Length: 272
Image (cartoon, rainbow, N blue to C red):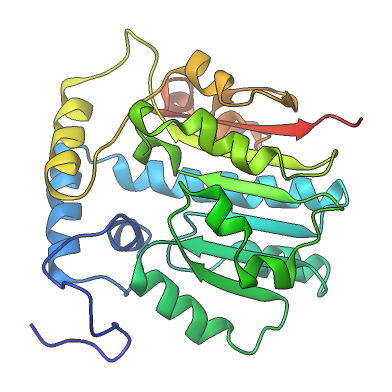
């Protein structure tokens, strides 16, 4: 396979990645044949997956706009993936050109492409790191350059934590970030999942494909997602289906929104 000029020389083109499969579902161009093959196979099993991904991205946009309305001007986007239209810096800096953003991802293609398009933006930094290691992320020069933790910061974990198993302690991971945050900071989460009686044969098969070819996936229900907000006060409407979190119009939820395979919420760290 010919290596595109935007692909770092040390990555395996035959190994699919979460960021590049997600990029393909979003209609992006920074993915390889191996990523497209897994993405298409998953689509054949669960055709609604593309709509699911688009809904997570729409939640990101709504959450950032809400945070801007609350006066937040600093964003730490964990598992940010490959920047596409309507990403955090575009939304935030349209409202305030001084807004500061740090994108963090482990995928070298996501990081390389992010750096190439954001190189001239002095208020945005891109960090290649494992988001499961908060101490390393928070100690990085990129975070130190952009974020002032004496002021509110919004930590974004959009479509991320279903790739962190219980064995990898997502509660401790979140705690590592939460404990550094000033009061009045926020945590935004969206997460794949179902209630106990809702999982279907197609979703189970899609999960098996993803587990086999990309990475392990852990679905969580509403109560499990609520537990991840320990130390935060949930913003109304609490933990709800992704399309139902502060939709721009009731029509945006749709009939399928009530059984959408994922939840979203925003929490605020309490004032002292």
